[in-house]
Each structure stands twice: as structure tokens, then as C-alpha cells.
Image (cartoon, rainbow over all chains, first blue to last red; front, side, top):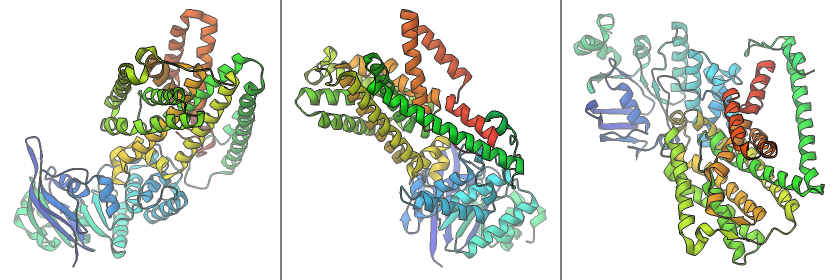
Length: 244
Length: 346
């Protein structure tokens, strides 16, 4: 299958702290890849390097054949790689619809307000937030903020979505909804990379898992195999998921 | 009607569900009231706009010329300071650059229109390097850097004596048509500034600027080119300030670096109008500028030399008591009363 995103030997240091020590990652078209690992393993750092705006200390990132290492986030976004943030970042004083319109404008001309509004409505419908279109984004509840985060990213028309702990803090019911939505997106041809702690979701959805620990890649493979890996069980999973 | 009527629908708690009937009628009454208010405001504005143009009093014309000038400046400032949330205290740089461009063009024999166009261009072009440097910084550092940029431009004007005449300044023949002409030109400039602001607000740039104001990183991740958007805003803003500088130059017939590059007399009033009236809203800045000009004038008449002190105190009190500006206050009350009216949201 066609490779859409690749990170090669990515290093990132913040002063004396090495957050990432040479991690490589390949994502193929249409794949769902999960990045898991204990807190401080470097998952969010890896995501930041892939999404642009943060330059790796060493290593390269390529997306759809372009070397995007150190590109500003907005250029990466317009190339087709959108992200959500771990802690949702609504544009608080704007309405929910306006939030999503900002994303839709990534692919629209300076005066295409009507098209942006329509595209935003479609995205809100998709994530189940259409009823709240007129609400002020800062007043949404936590689960709706996550929905908004996803809608804004979707509105930018991505080929690949980076989702940073989309399901953290959701109720089991909401996790199920979110999983259904992500599977739908995948059927539409979107490639997904998720950083996630909710293991039910990760195990059920991902084609491949990448396990990080202390800035290094601990192991990589299909969920069933990773779930049996002794090192992964020891450092992260615990016995509950042993045996996949 | 108004307050009480609208009060009926005061708590449409379910924003998502269909609102109860009381809320519907309340909202309709609120919409009607706000429409009537808007029409009344428009009529009042039109009367105010025409009055000084036909009145024989040069004082009234002068007062209104000043008002339109600062209303336009506040409107221009609002593009950057209000929509994009980039609190600039360096707008005197563009104002002064425009004033000098116009003065030099006019004293060197260029026509009125050519000089004015040059002034706008000077402001718009100067905004690019200033923005390119200052937009690297955020928050208080950005404010300080804009202050410094304006100071650098002032020092250039002061020391490039061969071109600007230095501290001596430039004396121009008085504007033909007097204060009444200045007032008409001021009105035209204000119209242009308001039109620009309305267009920006409704277009992609307006959405992007407001997104940047709320959260620059999130906006960038959603495809907003932060630097480019801010430079557009600052350049449009600088161009309008340049035109305002040309008008000031024509109105006063004399400029020097101290007056047109002044922090206290140019940069701060431009920002204050928008802050007092309600930053981010379309009609906030001119309303605030009106307050600033009128209060300053009244204080000068009533208190003589103590006017600066009283004026300052009044400003401090307003900023402390009405931090979102008067239009912001009105919008908040309207929102609280009529549910998601949404109009005038900053």
C-alpha cells in the first residue's frame, strides 16, 4: 500500500531532556495506527513533530511525498494533515459554527463564506453537534468540545487525521459513538493516527500499534501481537490485556 | 417595550432544544427592538453626519472633523487590535508616515489626490516590516515592540532633516474649504474605514483574525496562516491610518515629528476609542472615539488646564468598570436577555 506519512529517526530534545530518541514511523494509505505508551513516553512529542510547527532536533518527516520537516502547522494542514489537541482548544468566543468555518476556510477562497458555512454545517452534522451550531464554543461541555475539535479538523479536508487522546475523559457510551464515527471516516478513505489510552478502542480499531517508552520505540505490530509482548505488558498494559 | 419585554425570554436555558413559546416571542420582540434601535441609531448618525456640513459654525465643523478622524483611526486600529487581538501601541508610526508622505507630496507640487494616495500607501507599506518584526512576539512583548517601532520611525523623521525638515516640521497652506471641507473628508475617511472593517469582518480574513485572537496555535493547526493574516490586517489598518495622517496634515496645516508620531496624542487615542467602545465589534470603535473626543473637548472647556487629569481619571474608571467596552456591555446584555441573538458579539 501507498505510504502517506513517514517519520525517519526522529529526535527531539528540550534542553537536556530527550523527549524522543530516534523513533521511526510509517503510515500507509487508509491505515489506522495507534500510538500507545505510558505517560511521558513521547507520544505527544511525536505527534507534534508530525503535525508541523515543531522542528525535530534530528530526523525527517515526509507526508504525501513532500518533506514537511519543520513546516509551519498551517502549511501541513493545507497539505492534508489535520490534528486535534489532547486538551480541546475551542476558539472560545466564536460560535461552534464559526469555529468549524475557520477550518473550512483552509481550502476556500477569501470570499467563500457561504461555502465555508455549508461545509461547516456538514462537518457538525457528521460529529453530531449540528444542534449546537449557534452556541458559544467556550460554553460547550467536555464531550462536545472533543466533537468540536474533531469537526474543525475534518473541515480542513484532511487526507490524514492525527488524534491526540480523543477518547480520554469520555463516558463508555461516548467512546462507542466516537469509535463508530472514526470507523466511518476510515471507510471514507481517511488515514488515522491515534494517540490513545483507552485500550478497548485502540485494540478494536487499530491495524497496527506503535508502543513508545522513554522516547524509544518499544515494539510495533498488530494489536494482538503487541498485546502478547512481554515488554509491553511489563511497562504499560499490565496483565489485563495480556493474550490480546 | 425593550427591557421588560425582552426580559420575558430571559432564560432560554435549552439553547439546543426548541425554545419555549415565551422565549420565541421574547426573542422576536428583542429582534424588533434591536431593529428599531438600529434604525434610530442610523437616523441619528445621518443627522450628525450632515449637521456639521451645513452648519455655519466652524467650531462644530472642527469638532466633527476631529471626531471622524479619530473614529476612522479607531476603526483602523480595531482591525488589528480588536479582531486579531494584537494590542498595538504603535499606530502613530503609520499615521505619521502618512502625514509626512502627504505633506512632502503636497509641498513638492503633487496634487491633492496623489498626495493622499501616497499617504495611504506609505502607511500600508510601512506596516509590513513593522508587522514582520513585531508579530514574532506575543502579549506584552508585542505591545512594547510596537511602541518601540513607532519610536524608531519618529526618530528617523526627526533626524532625516534633509527630507523631513527635522524638528522644525512642515508648514502647509491651509485647506481650501476650511473646516467644513475637513469635516466632509473626515466623514468620507470614516466611511471607508467602516466599510473596510465590515468587509474584513465578513470575509475569510475576519474569521481567521478572530481565530488567532482566541488561540493562535489552534488556529494554525486548523490551517490559518498566522503571520500572513496578521500582516494583511496590519497593512489594511496602516493604510487607513496613513490616510488619516494625510487628513490631519490637511486639517492642521502643520506637522512635526512630535505631534504625528505621538504615543499620547495618536497611538493611545486610536486604541482607546476601540477599547472604550467595544473592541472587536463593528460599531464599537466609532462610538468609543466619539466618547473620547467629546469628553476631551468638554474637559478642556470646563476644566481648562486640569483637563488632562480629569480625562485620565475618567478613562481609568471606564476601563475598570466596563472592561469589554460599551458596545460589548450592550451586546452582553442583549445576549443575556434574548438568548442567542448573536449580533455584536465581540
